[in-house]
Length: 170
Image (cartoon, rainbow, N blue to C red; front, side, top):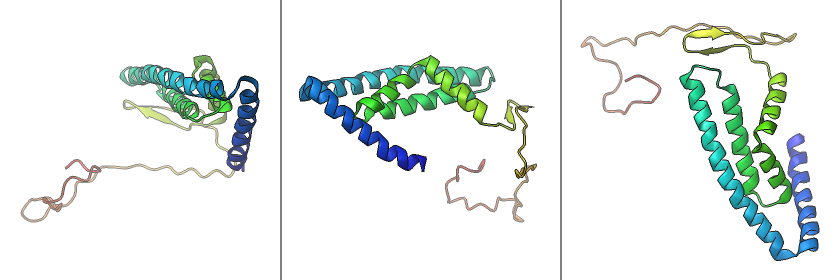
């Protein structure tokens, strides 16, 4: 329902803003502003995206929780999509998501609303917010790696003429 409302509301807001801004400053200045914000937004998204990738790589190298750098990267990606759409409302949302303080605020808001039951990285396991809600199904399991059976000649049953699947270590 919210997605349908957004698909109807956002274009109506954009049309109203185009009419008002175009009426106030004219057609060509309005189009110039839309193009300028697209180019400026592309440059800002690229520079901030590279910084976000660097922060993500640093968190992986230091074995820190990569949640925040991933969230910042996702918001920068959404910002780029918003800035590529022609319009003043989507540009305002896109530029606001490029402000690190606003991204941090959105991240902390979402973090309060999402429950992570466990996080594992680098061989150690840390459990966060293990709140369970009544009626929630939890599936717990273990796995062990099993070697595939070999035929009498000692060869693997995999067809050697086929390329590796990407899911196996062949």
